[in-house]
Image (tube, rainbow, N blue to C red; front, side, top):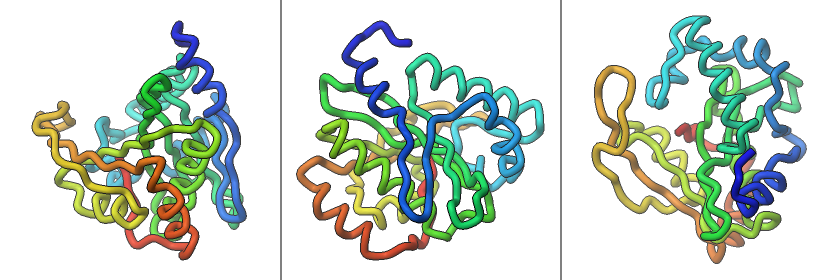
Length: 210
C-alpha cells in the first residue's frame, strides 16, 4: 500500500462496491482472471489503449500488472458486471489519486464487444463520478484519451465532461508512436448538472475508453 496516509485513506474509501439497477462495480480480485480473459481477446478494445493484448500471454501480463496496481494502491480497479445478464462486462479504474489536491482520474476503461452501446459505460462512469464527488469529496475528476480516438472523445462529451486541450507527445504507445492526449474534466461545481444529464437517458452513443 502507498506510504502517503492521505492517499491511502482515499484509496480505502474508493475501493468499494458501487451499483444501480443496471451495473455493479466491485474491486478487482485474483479470481477475475478467467472472466476478464473471456471478453478481452477483441483487438477493437486495445486499438487506442496504452498497452496491447494480442494473445493469452499479453492478457496474463496485462492482468497481473492491473492486479498489482490495485494491490499497491496506485489505482482502484473495478470489475464491471452487467446485472441484466450477470456477466462480467469489462473494467474501469480510479487512478492518479491526489487527495490533497482534491483530484483524481477515471480511466483504464474497456468493455467486451457484447456490452458496448448498451448504456453500461454511461452507468459505470455515473457511479464512479457520483462516488468521487459525493463520498470522496473530489473537486476535479479527470479523463484523458488518445487524440485520434474520435469515438471516445464524443463519448466523454456525451457524459458531460469538458474537453480542455491536447498535451502533445504525452506518452509512448504500442506500434512505436507517441500519443497526443486529450484531457477532459468534470468539476465539483458542475456535478449537479452533469448528474442530472447522465440520469436522463439509460444509453450513450459511444463508449469512452482511455
